[in-house]
Amino acid sequence: MATDADDLKFRDPETAQEIAADIEEQMARIGQPVEIMHVCGSHEQVIAKFGLRSMLPSELTITMGPGCPVCVTNMPEVDEAVALAEAGKTVATYGDMFEVPGTTKSLADAAAEGADVEVVYSASDAVELAEDNPDEDVIFFATGFETTAAPTAAVLQADPPENFYVLSAHKYVPPAMEVVAEMPATSVDGFLAAGHAATITGYGLFEDFVSEYDLPVVVGGFEPIDVLFGIRKLLSFIENDEDGLANAYPRCVSREGNEAAMDAIDDVFELTAGEWRGIADIPDANFELSEEYADHAARQQFDIGVVDGDADPLTEECICGDIMAGTASPDGCDLFGEECTPTNPVGACMVSDEGTCKIWHEYGGRPDL
Ligand code: SF4
Image (cartoon, rainbow, N blue to C red; front, side, top):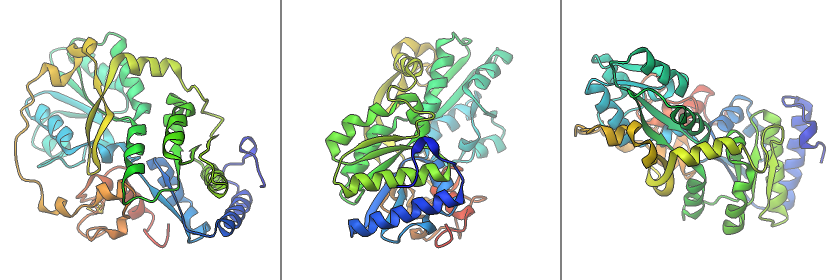
């Protein structure tokens, strides 16, 4: 093996070729197809942008799992945000959520019809919006995994103004990995876990998962060499039939993670069951505000009357859920690049920069990735 995680030059082509050669040898020794799932849109971005799949043996499949927070935000959650906007509230949300289709419309559609929808870059920006507009109810439609749940928790702990509310669609990744690992249609041999989420949770979080599911997990960073290094480490576990756990992102991730951030999350949120768009109803995978923060919980403070309506018939053909479960690829969708494009998205996977369909569309799809 040519390099050690601490000595990586993160975009060095020579190092990449050396690791790819190691991977080829590992695959030859393993002698059968291997599937590795990563759980992060940022991993898919780097894999596509740098054409990493083209460097790997064809028997090695790298799939993306439920790692796009925008994509797994459930349609009824978008409907709630739209209903609040249409009821005259100011809805603040991250830019990626703006065009995600709900059942009948997106927040962008609501804004086009006159609703007040503001794009913010952080939870703090949403608080500032509430401070600047004391006569408005400002609803922060809060999405994302642990990395964005932590700042949402922090602003709630910091005594925000009374007119600031959170509509939480935050999600917790580990239970979703368990559901994917148990799906009969998946054949995952190991997980490349998201480094940024692990900066919050710590990589020790995966110890129980590894022993319960007999699947190796490697926490990986977001440069090409990080990803290749993580894949090589996973293959060494698979080759030796080990259900190992490794941290291939030591410059950011520790075993314990960010304990202050986790304390804030534990204080502000409780985990509840909830639907991940197109995947499954997953126990303990949704962050809902705890009773102590009920005064700022949009679902408790407002009667959110979601208007019924029929979804666009094309959404019936969207296989975004299967893609996020790792059982399909964008090129398996008949709408990919035709009826569904980034400027006219049918499903959430074509909206977000972390959505597999949008990434594949941007970088040319198979076989160019
Ligand atoms: Fe859904 Fe569009 Fe992706 Fe097809 S291409 S799975 S319709 S998001």
